[in-house]
Length: 346
Image (tube, rainbow, N blue to C red; front, side, top):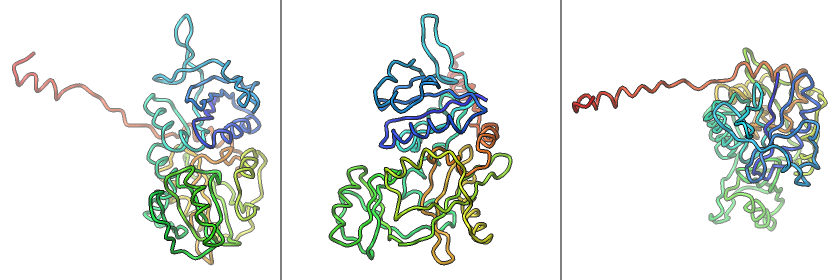
């Protein structure tokens, strides 16, 4: 199978996307990979697989690569003898953050009838925004951590016990996230978060909370990963997550009871189906007492959470054959013709 890896984008997580894309060379060994880079200026480039390394992008050398045009049916190179389509069977959206996770790429792929693996527009909009994720989970009967939503113009009267955690609403990879231990630290943490977004979510910081990650997708059956218990400090900052996104070796399953595993997986299924069909997502859960709480949805997880699956590549291929398709709408202008006939026009 020929898989086009779409990566980069105009995002604070641009560099993480590059790391994830490079990791796919180690993971997708049986498939032919085609790399399509989206520059910070939102230009498309065809990157030769053998040249895929971080220096190509940090040096700006990628600009010497072939530019691409997105048209009906796929990506094309332009030359003296016309357009030539870039061969691939499916596009894997690996753009983290804005452009990739907010629905822009999903909309473009659907508009131009390009088969793609990624959350669709509605799923992107709800999972990219942490506040909307709360609304989604609550509507599905999946509990979440308590929260306060604060906009940049709002008064900073926070009625929540310390310590607490401040997160930009529309950002991942722990960018702009701060743990606030006392009231004197709050203004600085909010200033940092508001550098990246006009809205923030404030949650209680639960020291020592048990956290578990569940990834998966739905093909002709449920394909669920192992449940991982990430071994980490208070939270993974940007630098630690940057390194974490390059993982390609499978990790061990969490040592948990079958009943807890079932609770986590049932919550995951409620979130996933039917909204996230056509994508591989990872949900991060907190367990407090006997309650499973959704922490966040990762609609395009780092390196696609490949390290949580026993055979990620085969699953990806199966998913590519089970992608949702838009309903074909036939436009025959019957209504306009009827108006014209009623007016005596032929």
